[in-house]
Picture 1 (tube, rainbow, N blue to C red):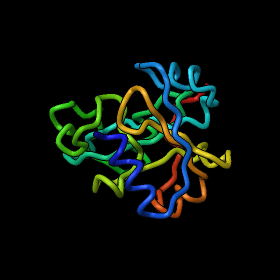
Picture 2 (picture 1 turned 45 degrees about the vertical axis):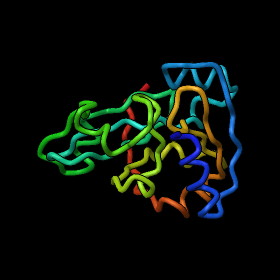
Picture 3 (picture 1 turned 90 degrees about the vertical axis):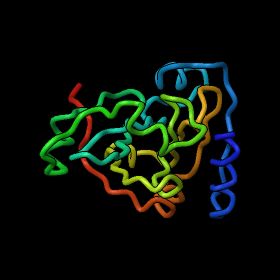
Length: 155
């Protein structure tokens, strides 16, 4: 079960977290609404194919990823949304569209939008469309040592 794997991982790393079970949702914005988590605090993970390798781009639920900005930031030759067939094996048990932004757990490089640093907490899917976890941003940063950049489209 993906949720238990995420919870076990966080606990094994000494990360305190809150779990929020919710009705099934299919978009990050819906999840933010039903869990009463601000869209800017709910992180959504977008899997990209960057020069043939998968990478997790993490952005606020309330925003859209800019492929152009991300490609420029990475200095990539090619960048596109990854197909499920390319990444599903990297995230065993996770539902499509509910991948947790835990690159260290899955062995996948991660890039996080800098606006997610504006709040003291970050929430994200726990591998399913029916549960999220919320952690202190400082704990997330200590766990993931994320690289930050400007990844989102303008208003």
